[in-house]
Length: 85
Image (cartoon, rainbow, N blue to C red; front, side, top):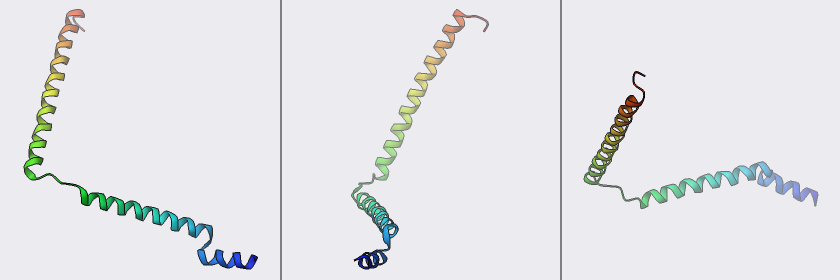
């Protein structure tokens, strides 16, 4: 009976071999899943991409201007409270 276990262990590569086989199949399955999901993606056209980019840049500029305005206003108010600093 002990020799049958030893022979089975030699054939399977032991615990270490089984571990690497399991990890290898998990990594392989992960990448297969990634590629199958990428096939389902609908990529934007050049026109849609351009519109989205312009929209994002416009919003960034508007928010930047708002923050600049609030910062300038607060600086003026602080200069009124603490002149000369």
